Length: 251
Ligand SMILES: NC(=O)c1ccc[n+]([C@@H]2O[C@H](COP(=O)([O-])OP(=O)(O)OC[C@H]3O[C@@H](n4cnc5c(N)ncnc54)[C@H](OP(=O)(O)O)[C@@H]3O)[C@@H](O)[C@H]2O)c1
Image (cartoon, rainbow, N blue to C red; front, side, top):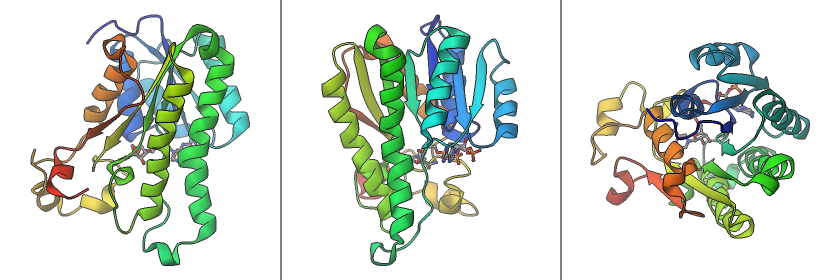
């Protein structure tokens, strides 16, 4: 890998497994120190070991939409590694399946709280504590469900559409020293997406022009690019990472 993030500290939320962990792994491989979050301490501890131990990574347990947890995590990043240059808002939830006409409004509100408002709060916290003065880069993990309707997960898709628009607004507001971009993956093989492909992976993958589902490393590589100086003239964009599926009319 490279040394492109040497001396940089990244905060990656929801990173004890899946896409968040793969992003953290790629950033460490490229020289960064990382601060990872998730709710469960045990899985975080295992992830820190996988990332190379406390020289490379520390973990702070908490809910992504808890403001005390956000402030504590950013403070720990600066105390431990000296900066908070890079932020990846990766946490996302989808507790509701089914038509919008029967969606539980309290659950819909929770989706917006975690997938959108918490992401904004993390940006505010990192901005206040570090990036306003020193600059930096941010990536929000959205979804192809935020680009095209995906019946059954409509409220999740609407929240990701809002996250994509928020990315654009933040990019305008935070330039020139802070870049803000997003990624929009299709189905990536993680626990979160298991119900979409488990037991029928070949059938699901056959609809994709690239004839396979995504793996977390596919997302880690693109997020690392967007955070790096190679993407120094890109802001406010959403990179679709989908094996070509949206070209076929699917999501
Ligand atoms: N997999 C896909 O096909 C796919 C496609 C498009 C977009 N995405 C997006 O990618 C992101 C990551 O998804 P994934 O597939 O990697 O999921 P995953 O494998 O289930 O991992 C989710 C991670 O987030 C943590 N987490 C969940 N809820 C949290 C909360 N409320 N506060 C803090 N941490 C929380 C989990 O740990 P704890 O359970 O211990 O908290 C875990 O570390 C999400 O934003 C998702 O919407 C996924």
